[in-house]
Picture 1 (cartoon, chains in turn red, cyan, green, yellow):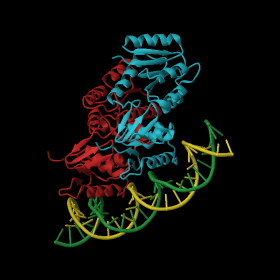
Picture 2 (cartoon, chains in turn brown, purple, blue, yellow):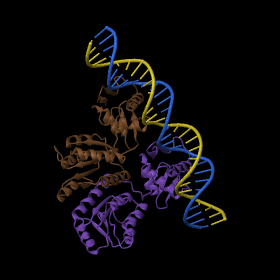
Picture 3 (cartoon, chains in turn cyan, yellow, blue, red):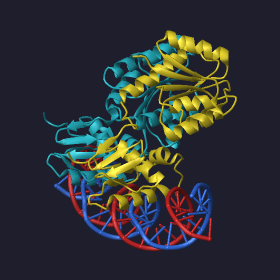
Picture 4 (spheres, chains in turn purple, cyan, blue, yellow):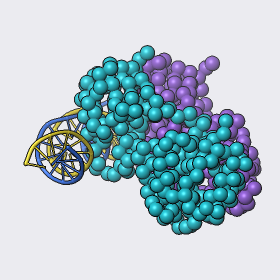
Length: 229
Length: 229
DNA sequence: AGGCTGGTGTAAAGGTTCGGTAAAGGCAAA
DNA sequence: TTTGCCTTTACCGAACCTTTACACCAGCCT
């Protein structure tokens, strides 16, 4: 399916522009307007690559990168207005994989994203492919499979995507619009019941427990019940 | 341990300058002043990473890269005077990992070299030049043959490439676009069923087991089922 | 309470896309 | 020319995403 990009950029206009372009280029985009949200989303294991602006309102992008590197080797491309060379060198030292000065050409951004993803796909996997466990569920991103008590669930591509997003945000509510965007890659339109159907099918495949693993938050979205320790 | 860089650059002065700087930065440098020598050295498995000028007296740097990519996934950083954007995009499409416009800052070159090498070290790739065994299959890259229970499989050149790539990533899903690029060396276009045919033929030659050794992951690609211990 | 409204659950039907494969075509080397 | 192999074409069946339809429930208003 499509690669998942996390775009951390405070300039709403630029973020929107890049987000749309990346979407047309076949990426599934998550957005964050500040460092705190960006870091949280990046650590949620719900994206394959990060595009990170250095100038952010709250936490400096380099500090976000530092914190991220303490946990993961998620590929990161830095973005900045400052053509400052020192900035650039520091960025690499902190662990960036690439660096693009603004104003950035969207086509170049895409080319560099793809070059990096290709390199990673060839070399044996980063921690994006690390298996993660949520109670009796185990996500194996490399195989694109989810196991329940060591038995693989027979999920379709979309079901896998939906469940994996819910699991990445286990314990908190994922809004329907976000779930739609992230898992299905398109916007939620009125009267579109597609997502509800996928949830329904997922619940069936997960076994219709009580209380349900996937809780409905009326008017908002869904949430995977955080598993008891 | 120092990393071995191959520097392919026709401008003697610049090459000498970069070579010296790279040496002071702890790299072991091999040099080539034209495309032909560069290609030969790169294929000699005697370096870890290549810095490749696009403007070369004999073969165009992009063609050198193309030929290199037919054989190996050696990391390559392109270098060029032309700030031409198209050149840049083409470079990435052909399989470059990075791109630096001249005049290049040696410090930035080193930073990018290190970023790329670090990425590769993190992702520890499987050595595709070594003999590998997967259950009853054994890949002998030296002979370009694959043995099943010590009996050689009668594979065509393309079939060998496809199966070899699948085996190198045994247990994880290889996307069709990647498989196409890595095994067939070209981009997957719409309505191209070539890959499907090779998979079909491979399955036949491997014996149509159940469950199939080569699993289809609908909408994504294929995956070689990891053999039971 | 009763009824309205809008969000949700889900069975079933619809329609499209995708993958498997036989067979034909094309191309290049022997 | 023959041979071997890669590619294209074509058809079929299966998978599965989406739509439709109806039932249900919660909250709110009267």
